[in-house]
Amino acid sequence: MSKSSERVSRRHDHARCIRRAVSAAEEVCTRRKVSLTPLRKRVLEIVWRAHEPIGAYQILAEIAKDREKAGPPTVYRALEFLQDAGLVHRLDALNAFVGCDHPAEGHAAQFLICSKCHRVAEIEDPALTRALGERARSSGFRFESGAVEIKGLCDDCAAGGDQ
Ligand SMILES: [Zn+2]
Ligand SMILES: [Zn+2]
Ligand SMILES: [Zn+2]
Image (cartoon, rainbow, N blue to C red; front, side, top):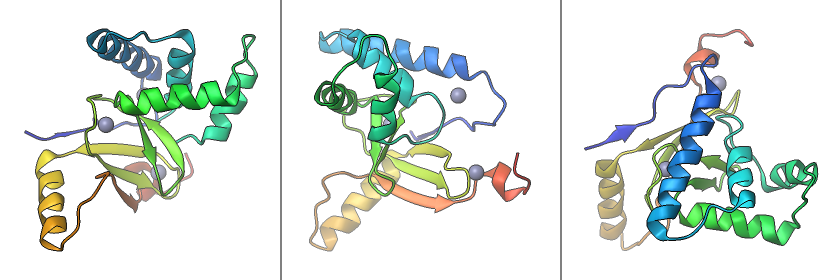
Protein backbone atom coordinates (compact mmCIF):
# COMPACT_ATOMS: atom_id res chain seq x y z
CA MET A 1 0.00 0.00 0.00
CA SER A 2 1.25 3.43 -0.78
CA LYS A 3 0.02 6.71 0.45
CA SER A 4 0.60 10.15 -0.90
CA SER A 5 -0.14 13.36 0.89
CA GLU A 6 -3.40 15.06 0.28
CA ARG A 7 -3.09 17.80 -2.26
CA VAL A 8 -2.92 21.03 -0.41
CA SER A 9 -4.44 24.05 -2.04
CA ARG A 10 -3.64 27.53 -0.84
CA ARG A 11 -7.12 27.95 0.54
CA HIS A 12 -7.84 25.26 3.08
CA ASP A 13 -8.54 25.10 6.77
CA HIS A 14 -4.95 25.08 7.91
CA ALA A 15 -5.89 25.30 11.59
CA ARG A 16 -7.29 21.81 11.06
CA CYS A 17 -3.92 20.61 9.71
CA ILE A 18 -2.21 21.92 12.85
CA ARG A 19 -4.80 20.37 15.18
CA ARG A 20 -4.41 17.05 13.38
CA ALA A 21 -0.61 17.22 13.61
CA VAL A 22 -0.76 17.93 17.35
CA SER A 23 -3.18 15.10 18.08
CA ALA A 24 -1.09 12.69 15.97
CA ALA A 25 1.94 13.80 17.99
CA GLU A 26 0.07 13.17 21.24
CA GLU A 27 -0.76 9.65 20.07
CA VAL A 28 2.84 8.95 19.08
CA CYS A 29 4.05 10.20 22.47
CA THR A 30 1.52 8.13 24.38
CA ARG A 31 2.62 5.05 22.45
CA ARG A 32 6.27 5.78 23.23
CA LYS A 33 5.44 6.63 26.86
CA VAL A 34 7.07 10.03 26.57
CA SER A 35 5.43 13.36 26.94
CA LEU A 36 4.77 16.01 24.36
CA THR A 37 6.14 18.80 26.53
CA PRO A 38 4.84 22.35 25.94
CA LEU A 39 8.10 23.20 24.14
CA ARG A 40 7.95 20.13 21.87
CA LYS A 41 4.35 21.00 21.06
CA ARG A 42 5.26 24.63 20.41
CA VAL A 43 8.12 23.66 18.07
CA LEU A 44 5.82 21.26 16.24
CA GLU A 45 3.23 24.02 15.79
CA ILE A 46 5.88 26.38 14.45
CA VAL A 47 7.10 23.77 11.96
CA TRP A 48 3.46 23.27 10.92
CA ARG A 49 2.71 26.98 10.52
CA ALA A 50 2.61 26.41 6.76
CA HIS A 51 3.20 23.62 4.30
CA GLU A 52 6.61 25.07 3.73
CA PRO A 53 9.95 24.09 5.14
CA ILE A 54 11.24 26.24 7.98
CA GLY A 55 14.89 26.69 8.97
CA ALA A 56 16.19 26.19 12.50
CA TYR A 57 17.00 29.89 12.80
CA GLN A 58 13.44 30.85 11.97
CA ILE A 59 12.19 28.41 14.60
CA LEU A 60 14.56 29.93 17.16
CA ALA A 61 13.36 33.40 16.22
CA GLU A 62 9.73 32.40 16.80
CA ILE A 63 10.56 30.85 20.17
CA ALA A 64 12.47 33.99 21.16
CA LYS A 65 9.19 35.93 20.88
CA ASP A 66 7.55 33.68 23.47
CA ARG A 67 7.08 34.75 27.02
CA GLU A 68 8.76 31.58 28.21
CA LYS A 69 11.89 31.60 26.17
CA ALA A 70 13.85 28.43 25.57
CA GLY A 71 17.53 28.47 24.75
CA PRO A 72 18.80 27.15 21.40
CA PRO A 73 20.13 23.83 22.79
CA THR A 74 16.72 23.05 24.29
CA VAL A 75 15.00 23.94 21.02
CA TYR A 76 17.43 21.74 19.06
CA ARG A 77 16.73 18.87 21.44
CA ALA A 78 12.99 19.32 20.92
CA LEU A 79 13.54 19.27 17.15
CA GLU A 80 15.63 16.12 17.43
CA PHE A 81 12.91 14.50 19.49
CA LEU A 82 10.29 15.38 16.87
CA GLN A 83 12.51 14.01 14.09
CA ASP A 84 13.17 10.75 15.94
CA ALA A 85 9.46 10.33 16.51
CA GLY A 86 8.86 10.77 12.78
CA LEU A 87 6.73 13.87 13.39
CA VAL A 88 9.05 16.20 11.54
CA HIS A 89 11.40 15.62 8.61
CA ARG A 90 14.60 17.42 7.83
CA LEU A 91 15.15 18.43 4.23
CA ASP A 92 18.87 18.40 3.66
CA ALA A 93 18.78 20.29 0.36
CA LEU A 94 17.05 23.23 2.03
CA ASN A 95 18.49 22.72 5.50
CA ALA A 96 14.98 23.05 6.85
CA PHE A 97 12.21 21.14 8.58
CA VAL A 98 8.74 20.18 7.55
CA GLY A 99 5.89 18.50 9.44
CA CYS A 100 4.89 14.93 8.57
CA ASP A 101 1.20 14.29 8.02
CA HIS A 102 1.41 10.54 8.64
CA PRO A 103 3.97 10.17 11.41
CA ALA A 104 5.62 6.82 11.92
CA GLU A 105 9.02 6.15 13.35
CA GLY A 106 11.88 6.18 10.92
CA HIS A 107 9.98 6.07 7.65
CA ALA A 108 11.83 7.00 4.51
CA ALA A 109 10.07 9.66 2.54
CA GLN A 110 10.13 11.38 -0.77
CA PHE A 111 9.40 15.05 -1.08
CA LEU A 112 8.17 17.20 -3.92
CA ILE A 113 9.45 20.72 -3.43
CA CYS A 114 8.07 23.66 -5.41
CA SER A 115 11.02 25.77 -6.47
CA LYS A 116 8.85 28.85 -6.73
CA CYS A 117 6.72 28.95 -3.57
CA HIS A 118 8.71 26.32 -1.61
CA ARG A 119 5.61 24.36 -0.76
CA VAL A 120 6.45 20.77 0.07
CA ALA A 121 4.38 17.63 -0.43
CA GLU A 122 5.47 14.34 1.02
CA ILE A 123 5.01 11.08 -0.83
CA GLU A 124 5.56 7.99 1.21
CA ASP A 125 5.68 5.07 -1.12
CA PRO A 126 7.12 1.88 0.38
CA ALA A 127 7.50 0.40 -3.13
CA LEU A 128 9.60 3.36 -4.19
CA THR A 129 11.68 3.16 -1.01
CA ARG A 130 12.20 -0.57 -1.57
CA ALA A 131 13.18 -0.04 -5.19
CA LEU A 132 15.71 2.61 -4.19
CA GLY A 133 17.12 0.33 -1.52
CA GLU A 134 17.51 -2.52 -3.99
CA ARG A 135 19.18 -0.35 -6.62
CA ALA A 136 21.49 1.07 -3.98
CA ARG A 137 22.47 -2.40 -2.79
CA SER A 138 23.12 -3.63 -6.32
CA SER A 139 25.43 -0.64 -6.73
CA GLY A 140 27.24 -1.63 -3.57
CA PHE A 141 25.75 1.14 -1.49
CA ARG A 142 23.59 1.33 1.59
CA PHE A 143 21.68 4.47 2.26
CA GLU A 144 21.21 5.76 5.75
CA SER A 145 18.35 8.10 5.21
CA GLY A 146 16.07 7.40 2.32
CA ALA A 147 14.80 10.94 1.87
CA VAL A 148 14.52 11.94 -1.75
CA GLU A 149 13.96 15.56 -2.64
CA ILE A 150 12.46 16.30 -6.02
CA LYS A 151 12.24 19.87 -7.26
CA GLY A 152 9.57 21.14 -9.57
CA LEU A 153 6.51 23.37 -9.66
CA CYS A 154 3.28 22.90 -7.75
CA ASP A 155 -0.02 23.13 -9.66
CA ASP A 156 -0.70 26.70 -8.51
CA CYS A 157 2.71 27.94 -9.61
CA ALA A 158 2.62 25.95 -12.84
CA ALA A 159 -0.75 27.57 -13.62
CA GLY A 160 1.01 30.93 -13.45
CA GLY A 161 0.07 33.99 -11.44
CA ASP A 162 1.66 34.97 -8.19
CA GLN A 163 -1.30 34.11 -6.03
ZN1 LIG B 1 -2.70 22.93 5.99
ZN1 LIG C 1 6.69 11.50 6.85
ZN1 LIG D 1 4.47 26.52 -5.88
